[in-house]
Length: 150
Image (cartoon, rainbow, N blue to C red; front, side):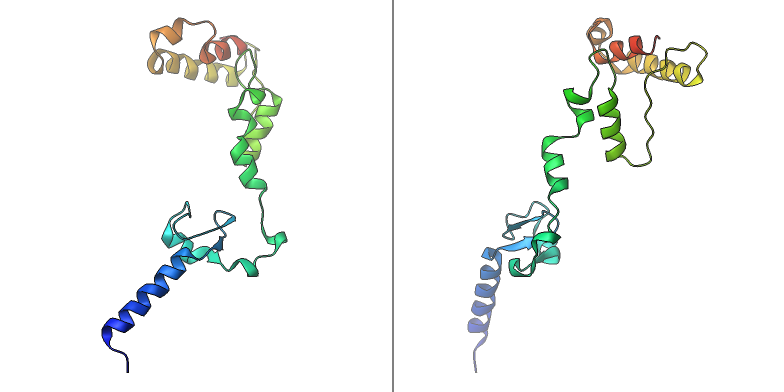
């Protein structure tokens, strides 16, 4: 029969071996050790599976690559040089936020959507921007106000 110290030592070795063992983390979508998991050791304990049990079809890397690159609406590719988002940026935002329905700026004076936007953005310009940004004609907020004919 083994004494308490031997049992404790074996348990510690098993835990250490498990820490160093690589498994496939279903959250991170990559093989990694318990310490490498970006979601933390508790998540790794819960969601990591042996690498041998993972099939290539089960691994969905499309989300990971899109996040690394960044959505078009957050980059220059999706932004209109005259302020706001271009068509590519609006489509990218709608894909990232299901249920949203972004539309192009409206310059029609009687449009209630335009009136609401202008009122909201004027308030943001007054309260949330520095005086330097408010005076700068090339700031994103001033470009947007011009695009909406505010």
